[in-house]
Amino acid sequence: MQNLQQQVQQLRDGLVPYLVAAARAHNSAILDAESPLLGVPVAVQGPAFGQVPMGFPETRAALLDMTGEQLNDILCSYGVLPSPIDHDPGYVDRRMRQLASHLRVPLAE
Image (cartoon, rainbow, N blue to C red; front, side):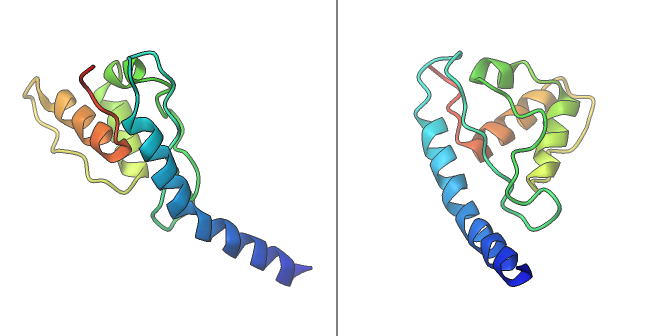
């Protein structure tokens, strides 16, 4: 039974890169701000491997409304180092662009 569970887990783990690619392809074709995004699973090994991070934005509009802290949390979940925290008002925009790029979400309609 344990061997079967290990095989199933290996199969699931092997599918993660394909799930990531499919979600990114879907997200890259988003046409408007309210179209739903497809959750991109975490592809780096760790406890969240294969899972969509908590707080994943449901739409491009939701992504654009995220705070710096929310963006930082999700970027860290993906293993992406967020842009440095500074007092420049543009740092939230830089993080949002980092996350949009990672998820392949176009920012302009």
